[in-house]
Length: 351
Image 1 (spheres, rainbow, N blue to C red):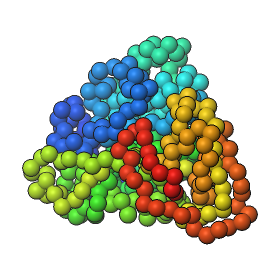
Image 2 (image 1 turned 180 degrees about the horizontal axis):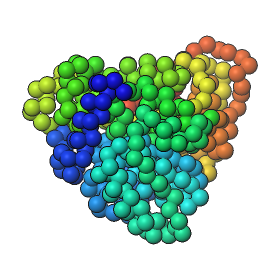
Image 3 (image 1 turned 90 degrees about the vertical axis):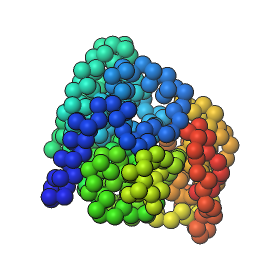
Image 4 (image 1 turned 45 degrees about the horizontal axis):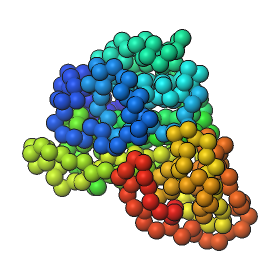
């Protein structure tokens, strides 16, 4: 790490180990959940120990469906709220790995690991927690092509070396694996002096990526097409912080991206996709992103990128794709997506 990265890491560790003792200590609403949980996730969240949830600082609900039996990597797991939700969803044959650099947070997660094992009726725990840095997954023994789903909840903004984190994510994901995370994004680049402010960084604002810089970063690490699942505005509600950052609009965004080779534009090959059902959490419709909602057994024209995401990921067992990429018709006719502010609904058939 360079000096900036070391200082940033130290500041964040101090903020989350000393300054914050519960979510009530937050100065803004940035690190608070804004996505509405679906009912089945909300029910599981109700089983999580209160001391775990009291020190939860997420900004969304980055928990995709169809995860039974999968291996999940939770980056910046904190006290383990999302990790324990995943523990129930993946089942006893699945595995959840949590990583965090704040020992005080991990102490809570480890203290209640057996509590949740018993709560879910497992003979042995399927959840392990590791003290370390999300930029250094190799040092923690996370091997290439070993993870089905990488998740994170309002943590990636905290790191000073975002390119390294995202490179590591795509290294450890299996082919066809998925990155599914929620984080704070900014409508413009944060001035450098404000990025270095320990309070702004700790409140998940100083390190928020400008949305277009995030797009460029994803291309750099080999991901040409990421999808926005939902977007919500964040209210700062703090006069001192607004005086510094009032010119910036902050958004809580849930993003998904697959370790699948796709093009940098949506191309039209005349392909059609059907959701055939079978995902327990999505019996009648499957939401891919904020502009793809697949009703069961209803055909939808899709671009080749969407077809590949549905065919080559874990969702391949639940979809039928008609057509291949032998005849090209030009760019897929995409219009501007309508932002999905409802975790259970998303409009439009466009790509």
